Length: 122
Image (cartoon, rainbow, N blue to C red; front, side, top):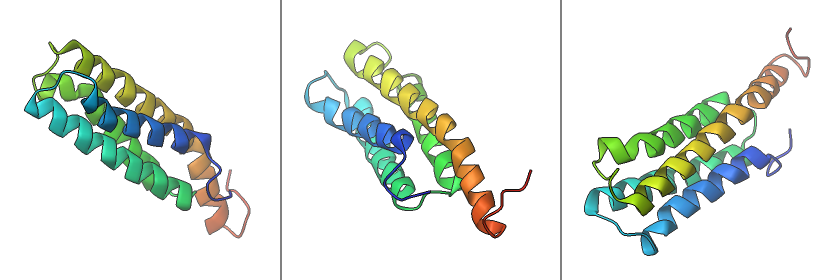
């Protein structure tokens, strides 16, 4: 699989950027700002790493965990009543999680192919 070629990882990068930057236009409290910027930046880093090195299932798992963390962050960080911040976290986290799930199978296939001399094990 070619580098910089997976739409799922681009989607995760965009979701992370949106979550981190949305703190500029949504009402925040300190815990929501920390969670949205932190998880957003980490999603961007994970997405770029996955784009640079396709075929690493661990990277896709990291992306899914970060998406899930962003999705549940309104409840664990106590900002579910801040509508803009909460909905941004739910949507961006859900999108990143789904993108990671959709990228996992191709990544596992690429990983298997590259470790078996170019022939995928079935």
